[in-house]
Length: 237
Image (cartoon, rainbow, N blue to C red):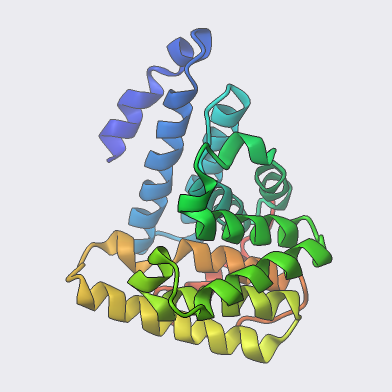
């Protein structure tokens, strides 16, 4: 991985000259994985966070150069920036115009879009909008019959809605209960799919959700290997 990153870094000037947004997007993906590997290798939290901050910067550069995001990016980018304590950059990602990332067939990805809209509103401190979209997620998670994507794993999607709901309601008890359930569900999923990759053992999205909770005065208390809360103690730049 390190050798690959070094080789891609050598192409930076060419990518800027073209410009080539896909290069910076690829770098962001590589550095995100690198940070996860550093965590698995028990590197210091400062090292891991520095790598994720570099990744977030590469994603921002790609977007500024015209890289088209998708609904999943509108969910993960703000969370990963929050995990690295890059709150202003999280606001940038959460404020991307919806026409850039919703795509031509929103109905087929409605859960992901609703989830991203709920998160975006939470990051931007838009209480009314976040409540609206979290309500939509709750309805989708409890629908009978459930939408296709929720049908794949109803407990997981129901928990996702519960975690977000706890944040918007400012309920520390519900947040930690839902967070503990998320770790349980993640463990079950990894066992079910037979995954033993170290990249699956770190819940980067959940770390971002914990930062979101911390910024609202909620203290995450869940102790779990997938959730290294010491990452959140790294000061902002």
